[in-house]
Figure 1: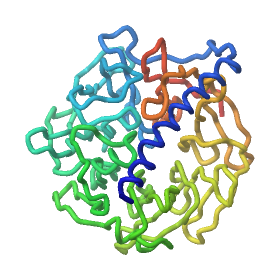
Figure 2: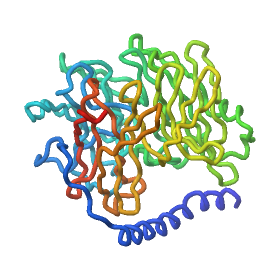
Figure 3: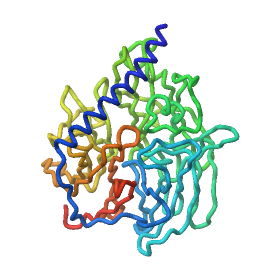
Figure 4: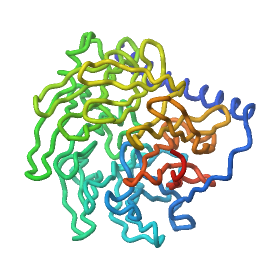
Amino acid sequence: MKKIIKYYLNHHVSSIYLSIFQVKILVNYLISKKRRPDTYQIKSVMQNSSYINTFFGYYDKSPFNPSNSDLIIFHANNCKPWKKPEPEKPTSIILYDLNNKIILKEITRTNAWNWQQGSRTFWLNDSEVIYNQFDRQNKLYYSEIYNIKSETYRKNPLPVQDAYKDEYFISISYEALNITRPDYGYRCKKNKDLDLFSQKLLFTDLKSGKIDILCAVKDVLRSTSYSVEKITYPRFNHVSISPDGKRFVFLLRFYHKFELKHYLVLYDLEKNNSEILIEDQMISHYCWLDNNNILLWGVISKKGDYYILNLENQKLKCLDTGLSDGHPSMLDDKNFITDTYPDKSRLRKLLLVNLSTSKKKIIGEFLEPVKYISETRCDLHPHPDPEKQNVHIDRIVNGCRALTIISLKDLK
């Protein structure tokens, strides 16, 4: 009976809350609605094509080729953009020439995708693209690498979460995420009987193909101040590898007495151990400044803002930006790009922020219709190109998802 009550509280009550939340958003929008800006020097990729939606995915990666910013990769499909992804409806992965405005190749179609992160498609180097796939026969998620020069495909047994160049990648359980945080999971398998405490972080050497277990969720949970027996719905997510490839951070989240707990954890690949960096404080999004410093948004001692975490002394410095939660990416050693969630007028802001002064400059504001919410929201997820001349975002245009390129010239 206790298990049934817990399941109801964790799932059905949240659905009721979401319905109330949606009504509140609609009322706020109608009251606060203002004219949306329409004077940006921006361009949507592949307009008036046979695809309804184009989008890239998460903010930690870039669609731009590392050595040729006219060459980009992205997702494209004809799914209803305000609906959750359906297991039988794939998304295409497109190789596109921005300069000539032509599709060079539909690399593949994959059923392993979501609106937030797509299929985790990104460049390993200037010729190889990695992404996730689903093996229907064996009911397994795996990753695949496509070489744009040799036009060859290479299959890896495990799905990718993050990779260090073309040397190795880290895997998490997308089956577990589909239960605990479906925004980031894949829906190709029914996983109601999955043991969430069996989750592991896995390492794949892309040169040798060797696979190693790095750590298990139970081991990390034992490092927290909570009894494992009283923890429910644990999950690993948001693996982010350091610039030198020697370490990575990830989020551990779980419920304890129906309260969501957050832990930022560091894993050292040379020492083969994990270490909790921030305990029991709300951490959402982050990026590496360098090999020893991380820029993150979190609620630390009840103050929500951007912070810099120094890994050597584990001290946090609040930037006092006054900004709400967003998705940061470094533009250069002085500035970062980030975004916001919709305000009461349903406008998402794209911002340039100075690390030293916390001075903010609004690059643009973008309307997100009310029906795009929760798992079907369209976060901007900005990330600059390698030359730091442009930034890409995902946004809603005429009711469809549209990968968009914005010039950063004269903004710094």
